[in-house]
Amino acid sequence: MIGYRVERATRESRWFAAFLLLCLAALAALPYWGGPGAMRLVSEMAYYLALAQLWNLLAGYAGLVSVGQQAYVGIGGYALFYLTSEFGVHPLVALALAGPIAAAISLLVALAVFRLRGAYFAVGTWVFAETFQLGVSLIQPLGAGSGLSLTPAIVREIAPDRAGRELIVYWLSLVIVVFVCAVVYLTLRSRHGLALTAIRDSEPGSASLGVDNFRTKLMIYVVTAACTGVVGAFIFLEKLRISPEAGFSVNDWTVVVIFIVVIGGIGTLEGPFIGLLIYFGLRELLADYGSWYLILLGVVAVAIMLTAQEGLWGLVARRFNLHLFSVRRHLTRLPGG
Amino acid sequence: MDWLNILIQGALLGGLYALFAIGLSLSFGIMRLVNIAHGDLIVLSAYIALVTINATGLGAIASLVVVVPAMCAVGYALQRGLLNLTLSGGLLPPLLVTFGISVIIENVLLELFGADIQRLHAGTIETASLQLGGIAVGAYPLVVFATAVAAIAGLQILFYRTALGRAFRATSDDAETAELMGIDNRHLYAVAMAIAMIFTALAGVLMAIRTTFDPAAGPIRLIFAFEAVIIGGLGSLWGTLLGGMVLGLAQAVGAALSPTWQILAGHIAFLIILVLRPSGFFPRTRD
View 1 (cartoon, rainbow over the protein chains, first blue to last red):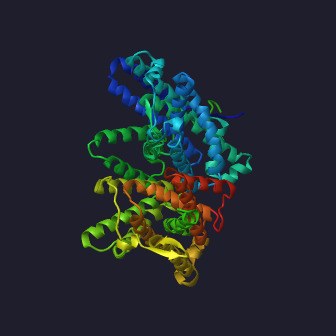
View 2: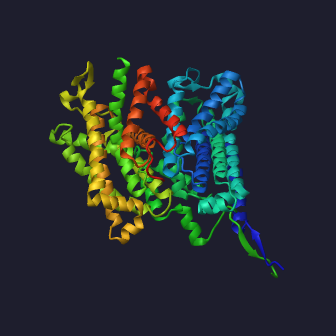
View 3: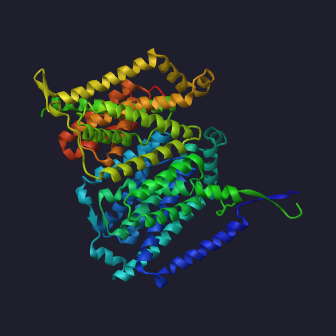
């Protein structure tokens, strides 16, 4: 009889899942054992992790290297501000609506940028983000060049007092990062994830086996845009203010994210976690030295791309054959098989 | 300003954009490398010119005798030392390495020179104008445009009349076979990048006389260069000149409507052309 079985979970992945749950529980309880400074830092780390996982799905798994994801951060942020102030939508509902809005716009963008391949796709997405930034700064109802603020009345809809609002926003950041990580993880485990692996290894090969390469990539692009839009709405719900420069900042929402993913390990789910810790560590360490941390991050990222393409996590995974997220399929011998 | 004048200004501005684009186009044509740091290398050239002028008292145009060799050396070293290592490993390494270099250049310039806006001065030529059939045309934009035309003509001669050009074309068509025929691709690529930097240096200095610049001015130059290349069609240098002119015209018309519309109008023209004619006007290379 059949002596093997296809499995995804490993012993390490089960332990790691338990460890992650434990961390999450500790972070959820942070308001009771940490100060507001720690809460702000954790929520910033949470949205950067979400952005990094999304960019990683796009670039590392679907091969769509975008330098224009800041477009969807900005669109999500502006969607939140516009829906709440013009239509009186509750901020949390507006946050959820930012997803479909970003998805719809990303479909239109894809119409143009999917005509470009490889590095040209990267610059094409960047042009779109620049176009959105310049366009928004001309639109009067969106505050034009000076941007928009959330009015106190809207802020009070989240919670009547400041402490309550900070608590809700903090928990919301955890909900969002868990949601985004779950979307990325489940996408990779689904048949679309298998199709992505096939496309990554060989586009003609996957097409000949019946994978619709174009549609698979388009789906990933739109899903990523939708989630990035929600994260963007959250970022500016926390900041309470948005301007074209802040909303569509390539440095804040794309450069940093790319460094996190590349240093940690592009094309691995574990990589962004490592990259996140390194980025925040360096930023805190070199806080007094201007932009030297960016220069250092750039040097590290270039060195990693030249020597170990799969990043720091890739080195660990290869050395110890360690895979903490059960995405890969592997064969297990059945007892008696 | 009447419309004819605006159109002439726009078309001449296209010469500068073509100069931005030549370096990008060369590195793509020969080694299939899209250099994300291209715009920052243009800005780096402008800063090298600034330092040269301050140190030696040379004029802005004369500073090219220092800037061009310096940028050629940067280009050769960059290609030989870093970029050659990325060319065999698929899409991600060249893209992300040049992206990293872009961020490094921008932030090092920021640390060295601060965020102040800079400009180079070239004396009377900046404001001189010529009367052509009743229309006053700025002498400086005309010089820039003529430089772009001469640069492209020179490159055509290099590509089709010299042994080096033959080697470039051979490597571009089939790198492995060219290597079997005795071409050292690593050296050839580095020479190609050095040549690309001649035009990058020219573009940087000519830009810095025309407009202000600061350490963060690179990415938008990359985008202008990229738009010119795509509008013109990958791999065609005369197409790139035309692409630059289309972009310049769109920007001039936009700026005439409202100054805030200048760059946006260029992007919109580019996006329309991308949707209607994705391979540009004169496509030659397939990527």
